[in-house]
Image 1 (cartoon, each protein chain N blue to C red):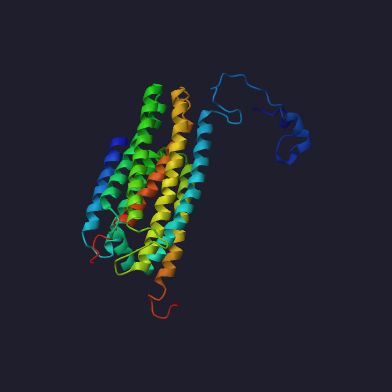
Image 2: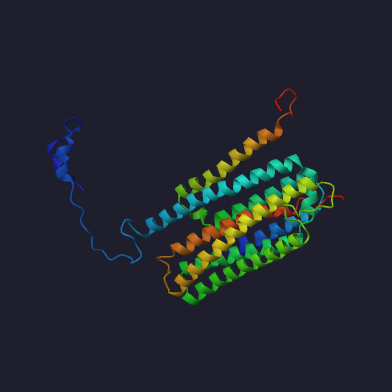
Length: 89
Length: 249
């Protein structure tokens, strides 16, 4: 099982290097982040045993990433100022 | 266990006053059941003990997420302000070394997971120490490659400061990029060095046969830390090394 996860992580790494060589415009960032998030989830669920963890562990670990989501939402707000005409810059 | 006092006060309207209940409280009897020597007395059993440790480590890791999250946020803001400059600066990082290091760290995560597993199945101390040693060796390899890269940056005047020199079109954003590069990879490298320190302690404990299927908490907790540092690199690698793929000089 660990070997399968390991294989998936190596494939993800190769994929992300190959995808970076293909010019997809802004989509490049989306693809690299999707691959990185998938790899991170695999490490958290299997190597860090959260998949078999108690509900409390689930909640606490999820809370950390939920906080990141909030942080990047705030920055998303900052970045998107002025995209819609009439919004404050 | 029936409470003898409730027999005298049947029904909800005749609940005994709290004072009367004091008699029902038995003094804590020490149950002399045989227990694992590693079970600390404030835990009920081994399962509760490892659950508490795991939870505590996760709370620490959440603070680490916030710590690195701030740097990633800074990266996002500056990259959004200078997309071209960041692509140009990233173009000068060595993708080959970055890829090698990513794979080295992923392999070290595998050996770490196997080190935890070898303790969980009560493998011989030799096996446990071998997996821990392999993990440490890979961690050291990672730091070695990082040292080669840093030396390269110093010789090419890519370290932000008075000696920073940039031949390209965007010198100022490139300097910001390299500031972030050194902050983020530097903080990550410090975590790796701390990780190696933790692992040497764990290695000595494993050598002294302290871990078996009933008690492997320290290996598990050290593993959580090691994997977390790996996850940080999983994000650092594409965001720093791979955003310059299509930069045209």
